[in-house]
Length: 130
Image (cartoon, rainbow, N blue to C red; front, top):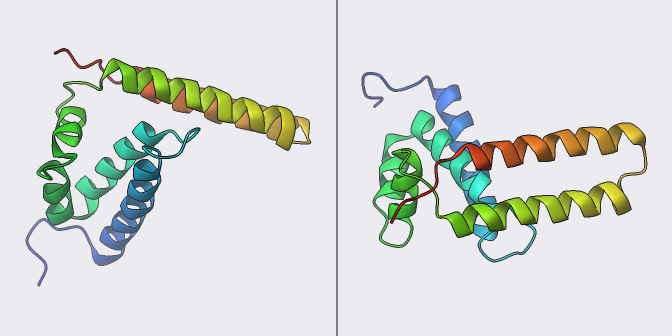
C-alpha cells in the first residue's frame, strides 16, 4: 500500500531502476580503474531519494558506506583524494575514448562535453573537512 506523499508507481520504478544502475556503476568504480565511481554514487543517491525512502535510508545508514553517502547528501563533502582520482579517471578514460575509439568529429565533441560536465559535477561537490 503506497504511503501518502509517495511518488506514482511508474515514477518510483523509474528512479529505483536508475538508482540501481548508478549504484552498480558507482560500486564498480571503487574496483575498476577509469570508472568514475563518485559521480555514479551521487546519481544513485539522488535517484533513490526520489524513488524509495526505504532504499535511501538503507544506503545512508549502511555500516560500510553509509557515512560516505551521508557526507555527500548533507553536503559535508567528498574526500579530496576521491575527487582527484575521479577527475583523473574521467580525464584518462574520456581521453582514451576520444583519441582511440571515437571516429567522427561530432562524437569526439559530444564525448568531450559530457566528460567536462562530469568533471564539473565532481568539482562542484564540497571537499570534506576532517
